[in-house]
Each structure stands twice: as C-alpha cells, then as structure tokens.
Image (cartoon, rainbow, N blue to C red; front, side, top):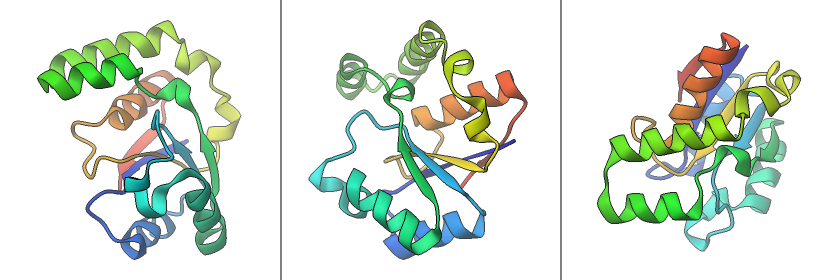
Length: 143
C-alpha cells in the first residue's frame, strides 16, 4: 500500500500534474475542509476532479473526516503553534477512528492526500499519512 501527499500552492498546474503522473498516483483524496476557494485556482473541487481525470486518469475524492475542524484552523491561524495544532488534530483523528472507518480497499491503488500547503512538514496531510502508515503499514512519499 502506497500513500503520497501533495500540496498545490507555490507550484504551477503543469508541475503539480506532472508530479502526480510521475509518482503513478491513481487516486487523490482531498483532505481540505474548504475545497471551493477562489484562491485555489486549478485545485477548486470541481475543476480539480475534471483536470485529474482528463489529464492524468486519476480519480478524485473529498473526505472531510481527514480535515481539521473550523475551530482548529482558526486557533492555528491565530497562534501558529504547530505542536499544539498537531496534537489536537491527532486527537481529532483518534476520536473519529479514521484508520478504522476509512475503506482500506480504496487505498490499494496508490493514493495521494491533497492539501494546499506547499510542503508537508507543517500540514495535516502529513499527519494523516503517518497515522495511516502506522496503522496499515503503508509507505509514504511526499511529492
């Protein structure tokens, strides 16, 4: 089982889609709470699903169970305390029993977790990928 992570800010559409194709990703799971923002450009929900399928033959899903709450996002934007955010977010993932309730069969095809952050270091997609890696023995690659 292979899980990748990818962000779309600070990159061109060409580079974004080329990274997914080169990594042989077959499915993208959008882990953003809000995926319809005008600032998302090519990564707005409906556009992204179309582009992924048309350009790369990749399926698209949006799963807000893997997203932070609005309150958690607001707290992090206010205090920028990554350690507190990560701890609180992981507590949320445990309360949601994410590793148990996700359809593991959908992850048998290489899946990329998508969020807006350019780098995975301080993004919740990395935390989700690491949790699934630990629970399921999946390998993780940050694109």
